[in-house]
Amino acid sequence: MIIDERIVTEAIASTFFDKFKSCLDLDVAIVGGGPSGLTAAWKLAEAGRKVALFERKLSVGGGMWGGGMTWTSIVVQEEAKSILEDAGVALIEYKPGYFVADSVAATAALAYQATRAGAQVFNCTSVEDVVLREVDGVKRVMGLVVNSSPVEIARLHVDPLVLHCKHAIECTGHDVEMLKTLVRKNGVKLNTPSGGIEGEQSMWADVAEANTVRYTREVFPGVWVAGMAANATYGSYRMGPIFGGMLLSGVKVAEAINELL
Image (tube, rainbow, N blue to C red):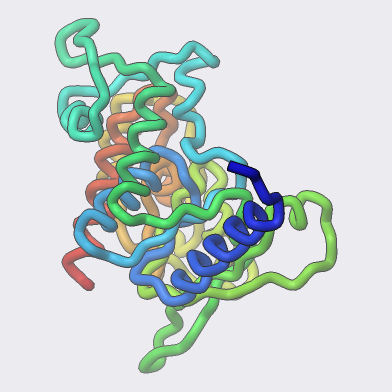
C-alpha cells in the first residue's frame, strides 16, 4: 500500500469536525477529565446520554496517572473497588479495606470505558466561559464557551466557539475553574452556605473522602460539582492519593443527572 499524506490529513480533519459538530447540542458536558469526570462520562454514556468531556491538557486522567508522588500505585476503599473492577482493573488488598491498583492501568481503563460507551473526549480544549440564559426568571447555565488550549496558553486573541448542553459538570478539581468564572463574571449565588465558593481545606482523608460524595450535587441551575471540585466548592478537605471518593462521586453525579433527563 502506498501512503498518501493528503488522505491521512483529510481523514483526520473530516472525522474530527464531524465529531465536533455532533457535540454542539449535548445532554451533558463535562469540564475536566480526571477520575470523577471520566467515571461520570462512562456511566452517562452507558445510559445512552449524549455526553462530551473537555480536558485542557493533552492527556485525560488528572493526577491519577501519577499515583502518589509519581509512584504508580493508587488506593481505593472497599466501597469503590467494584467501579475499577467493572472497568477491568486488577486490585490487591494491601490491608483490610485498602485496595491497591496500578495508576496507569486504572486511568487508561476509565478512559477506555468512557470512550467505548460513546462519550466524546476533546483534549487540548479549554473551557473559558459558560453560556447563561434566563428561564422563567431563573438564570441557568445552558452551554460552554471553548477554545484551543494552545491559544489560551499563548494568550492569543482568538475568539472561542460555543456548544449547548442540558447539564454541565464541574470536574476541574482543586481549582474549580469553570465555577470561579461563572461567579466572577456574573455575580451569581451558588447553593453553598456563603453563596460563593467556600475553598478547599488541608488534608483530612477520612472526612474528605466522605464529603467528596456528600457534596456531589447541583450547585447552580445547570451546573453540578463532582470530585475534588465538590470539596473545594463546599469547603471540605483534601484527601491525597486515595481515589475511591472521586470514583463514587462520578457515579453519583451520573445517576442524579440520569434521573432528570
